[in-house]
Image 1 (cartoon, rainbow over the protein chains, first blue to last red):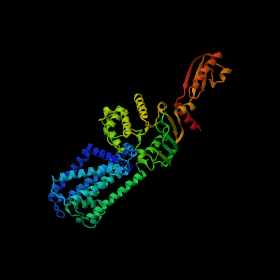
Image 2 (tube, rainbow over the protein chains, first blue to last red):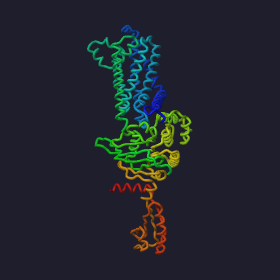
Image 3 (cartoon, chains in turn cyan, green):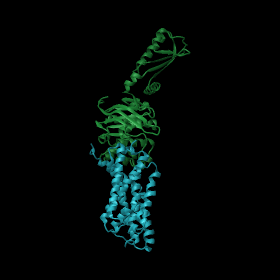
Image 4 (cartoon, rainbow over the protein chains, first blue to last red):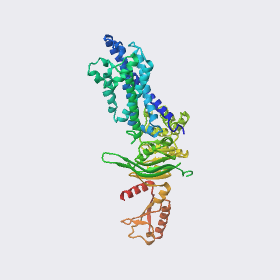
Length: 259
Length: 319
């Protein structure tokens, strides 16, 4: 037997490599386009408008919005990459190869989700590097920042995977990132501190789960946050576990994968 | 055929019901089937008979509603990894990543099935399918026939022992189809067991060792092709008479013949597909000459697998 009967490492690696190569093939769309968009945010909100704004929690406004903008890009891109990665084989019919191969849920997730998460990390590194051209900032807890970014990219890659299996049209594929993730991220404290909102908006804002992610990432950057880092961390881990459970269920039942 | 005896795939009571708005549709209904190592098995049936569903159930694309599938001694519902690693599939549709190069697409398939990279092996596969020159081309740049060969190359990348070919020559021109027949024959020579579905029954007649006929999710018949031809085949001969007959002479009437309404044609239908019918026709012509009945032409037709297939389906429809 060419592989361990319980886990097909080469199978997982093949999916991972291919998905990354797909991203390289579409580098403009996958990497350059989000970096350009985020750079424009830095220029407009960070440099031009930010120069006239008061610091928030002692952090210059241009630097304050970096974690939120990073989160905005990461959520959108990792979800889209992962959903597209599994939706396209379903759409074109090439999923037959994956389903007929000796790969299970673990290999598939490592391949598709791992690649989407890797792309997210590469994107985060490029965006943070680009940000240095426009805004002065420092990361207070770099290890936590890397860990939190990895956790978020993994969670939303899993979420995107579910989305890619659920969607039966390109329109549905775009609905969640465009109609939910982007607005929720904007309203989740990307450009302002939720603490500054008057009641009842402050409480309402905390119903938005994305607010906890933005707040958590902001803590790793500047040591200040709207909610406890541990709440943010716990919520993200809970979301990761939920998505993993849903995907395990999908593979067990074959929902939208096997006829 | 030497070495054809060991059962490597066994289906027992395989059933698949697709749920739909107007109730369930039974695509497979208690199918029992055994495939022997090293054979080419042709699965024939009209559209919607259940051929692709059967293949899908074995290859993991379709979840069976009931029944068991055992491949290489492994129950597919439990030890599916070990079984799937030895099975290859060439689907009916031309489904592949059109932006990928031929070589990378085949290498991906090899890795997906747990095999280490092997450029030499992939080159060998591509050469055997006349694709080596196109190894660096994107698949979208290839012709339809070449794309189908890419699918075969991908299916062969992990060196499967059991290969499913679902309509491998659909939409392929005559010349290329013959080339594919040669490739399939070469695979069998290397010991690969092949299960083939096709609409071209001549293809099955030419290549298959055994034939299964499926309709409405039921296997109607499974037999060695030669035995089936012998058992169900017939010889039909139409003898054009020089002068019309009003009735059959006594020596002629003992043959299984009928006289046309205008008495100008004598139709023989008999034999068993083993060539005995032709011998009987020769005896019939001698008997006609002996009886003083002259004829101006004979048209002899041995039944093909297609005739048997059509007859069998017609009988089932009438039953």
